[in-house]
Length: 221
Ligand SMILES: *Cc1c(COP(=O)(O)O)cnc(C)c1O
Image 1: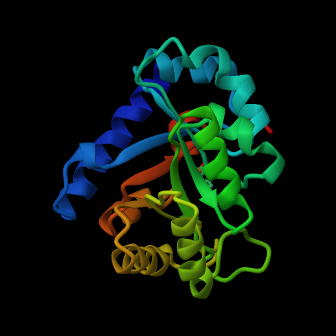
Image 2: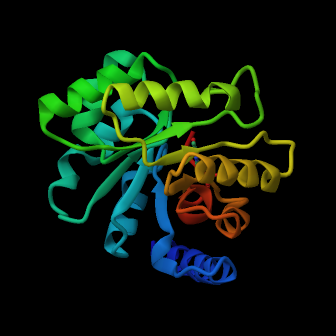
């Protein structure tokens, strides 16, 4: 399983080169190891390699993977990168350190209340549907100001934006758009880039990249 350790080193080297081109350092880019649908042995190999930041797209599965392990590591971070159902908000606030998929007004008061109740701050990103794809979650670019306003009214801090570019389009255009939007609204973080395009995403300013397959190998199911 040292293959995973090698993959992490290779990815970090790519991060370093791409970040340098954008005038930044490796530490300015957070590598989120996307562990959804990966085996226990692979998760353990990443932990053994010293990796501590993981991403999951389902609350239930994340709990199974990490609930018992997370307390062992003080620097452990868990990021939710899949859609959040409103009936899972309490569970999500308790389990995750960051939520990348705030995508509708309804979630905002729920998240704000729950953080207050649990006395826990979770870093929030708004997911933007930059390709305006009907089947994809995320707010349309035109609805982003409303969602930001709603967050402000409820005292929910938004740290950044996240996108998932359409499969058949050049991702650079979408990364560029997300960066422009984050600059416009003064948001410091950009969650963009996956196995196939994280290098480009970093050159466009990504602060958080979400890498699954290139790090762990093909998923189980
Ligand atoms: C699964 C997933 C990833 C990781 O994709 P890979 O191509 O395996 O790197 C990144 N972001 C989101 C939102 C995902 O659901």
